Amino acid sequence: MSDRYDALAARIDERFGEQLQRITSTCGELTYELGKFDLREVAAALRNDFGFEMLMDVCGVDYLTYGKDEWLTEDATETGFSRGVERGPVILDDTDTFPAKRFAVVYHLLSLQNNQRLRLRTYTGTENPPILKSVVDIWNSANWFEREAFDLFGILFEGHPDLRRILTDYGFIGHPFRKDFPLIGNVEVSYDVEKGRVAYKPVSIEPRTLVPRVIRDDNRYQPDLQDRGHG
Image 1 (tube, helix red, strand yellow):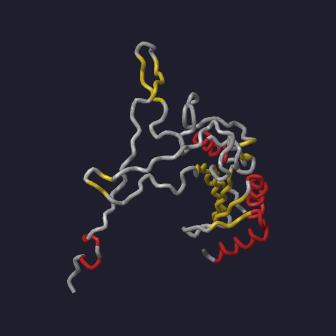
Image 2: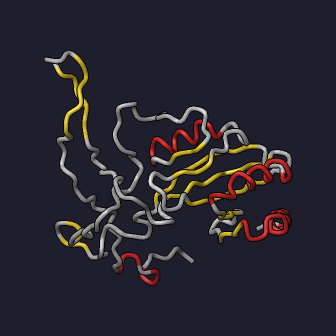
Image 3: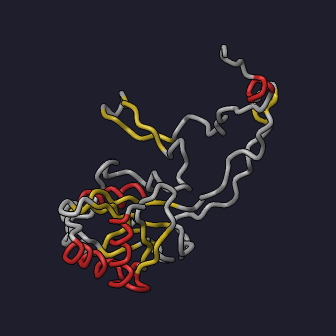
């Protein structure tokens, strides 16, 4: 982290105190986590007092299966990996609540005048559906970004002027970036000759567990056995 960002972090800590919690970043970027009810106050202050006049992106995140692997072993057999992990029960849309830190929204901010970047992350809490306050009136670029997060993750943004799907069609059921949404989807479309139009029908392909890239540890990769250059 450069001296400029250390100075910015000190200003932010002094201004917001416990409202913002600094998160360790593996890539040296300044990242803060905040409560959902502090979002608009902090966002307005960062724009007005710290010069973050541009919202570069808004990303939804689903942490339902975060940290879980599909495979239990690194050993390979003649037919590939031995077996895939049995997936546990998933949280479906008809549950009353979600885990408090299942859904998050991440805001990427840019200060053109100071040439600095900042990331904010807030969780939606246990509500179903997940809801946050919209920041469209703070950064107008949030309009389509929030629509995308709504479309793909089902996160609602209270106060958004036109919250509707932006990537999937209007008859689409579910939110395809949620971790409990099947990778094969629920329906497929094809042209129905009898109906004379494109029609939906149940998906015909079977779900399967993908085989990841095999990384083998054998003598070919031992540093002491590698060919050495002349001299």
